[in-house]
Amino acid sequence: MPRINLLPWREAQRKERKLAFLVSLGIAGVAALVTTFMFNLYFNSKLDAQEARNERLRDEIRVLDKQIEKINDLEQQKQNFIARMEVIEKLQRSRPEIVHVFDELVRTLPDGAYLTAVTQQSSRLKIEGVAQSSTRVSTFMRNIDASQWLRNPELDIVETKANQPLGANFTLFADQISMPAADAKDDDGKTKGKTQNQRSRQARAEGGKP
Image (cartoon, rainbow, N blue to C red; front, side, top):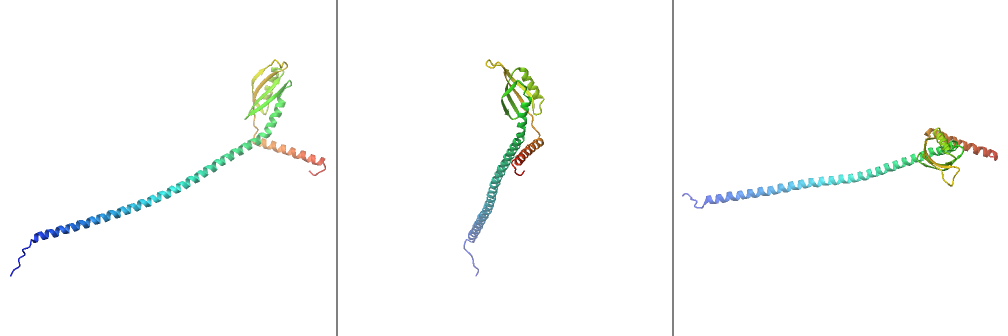
């Protein structure tokens, strides 16, 4: 006897297909969520690693900035030291020069005139004095112009005061000629040699050893 299925099999098949579709959809959703989570985890780890590298670079840059600042400080100290050495060398060179300048002022000053003040700013000399006449002042300026240590005499003022009938006050300017470094060293060596010779002569006079 044949069996007849009277149950609604099409409806059951449709439910089975719908259930399979929902299961597949759920599995795909879960797979998509897992994939998204893994991608987020991967990229977050990459971002964290890059941020760590950036922070390390920032730390290195800060260290380099401090080192550069120290180098700049050392360079500034070097420049200051060089400037001080140049000033000391210049003063050492000018030490015998000022002796020559004062000696030259005495040589160039004519009779009938005397100086009351001499001031110097850099290589510029301001000379103040009293002369019996303007001719003496002119002679003084010509002597300065012919000097080896002074040049460019410029007369500023000549005036006669009522309480000073025998002379006229004058003010003039002149430039000091700098001595070359080699000549300054030679002159300084000669000065030291003269000082040592004087000490030797003094020691001989006192009966000591030179």
